[in-house]
Image 1 (spheres, one colour):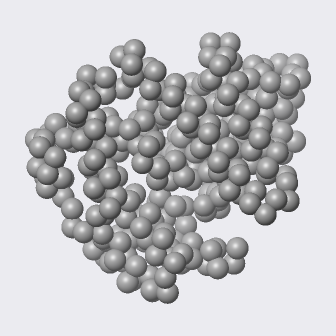
Image 2 (cartoon, one colour):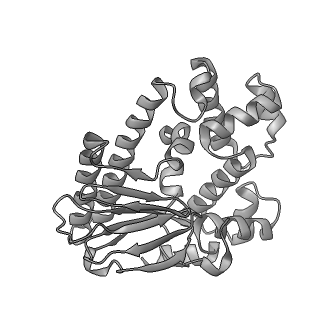
Length: 290
């Protein structure tokens, strides 16, 4: 369980933060944050001893080509990075969650922490190539470099998604292999319906009935498909809609809260800060100063 005293406040907002090897610490105490962090040891890294990272109290020893994932809210610690060869990227979880194609795989994504170069050479190679491209874009002066970095990130998750899909076919992933194609398709349709109508007063029973499921069955399979319960997923979509309104309208914060489906300004502020890592007003301020 995460604790507040281990919380690290990062100000990433909507971007991707790349940490070069010289800037990645030799060690760092136990902590957690509201962002995803991908840690990697490049294939050309020269090390005298393997770096060690502990995630959820499990230590991982890295060899060149290895990639680690620490998901939002997970406790992790840089135990040893003596040779200072590790690189990392940090980004808001919503960067991945907001793409409909990734939604059925989110739960499976979060179960993955270590991409071992020797055990999964093809996956490691493909993902590392996109991560190295992202590294190159991060130091460039291209006008669209942040877009290019995000494309590289998406390419990494496409590779991860293809790997997870193959696991699903082999019936070894998080329970969805027991579901029929029709059920999975209906879950995808349910997600699209929620995304498009999140500003309305949706309820678990109404969505379950709409797609022909009992509340119990829908709740269980929806969590398997998305990694979130119904309320969590709906809140994420409402925050996403609020982001759009903050960026593209002159509405005040209260109006945006209600037009995004929230019942009160306090619940809106709390949800937005939890998911985006900053207040709605700070988010808008960031957009106007970029």
